[in-house]
Image (cartoon, rainbow, N blue to C red; front, side, top):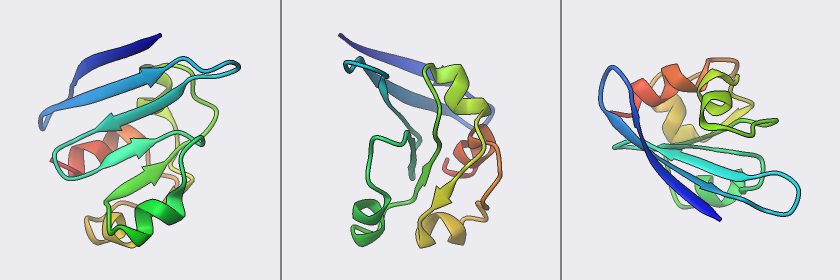
Length: 96
C-alpha cells in the first residue's frame, strides 16, 4: 500500500510518500527545494545528483519523520543552513 499526503508546515506544504514494505515503511517528505528520506534510500546517490537531501532513521510515520533528528545531509542541504542533529521539520522549513 502507498499513502500520499500533504503535510502543512509554516513555510509551505510538503508532500509525503509512504510505501509499506515488508518490515518497515519507506518514507520520503518532499518540500519545494529538497526532501527528507528514511534510511531505505541512499544518500550517496542524492549527493551525486546534487540534491538537497537529508536522512533520518527509525521512522514509521510522517510525524516520526518530522520529529526525527537528521543523521546525514548532502552538501547542497548544508548550503541552506541545515545541520546534523537538526529536527527534520526545521530542515523542511528551510527547503521552501
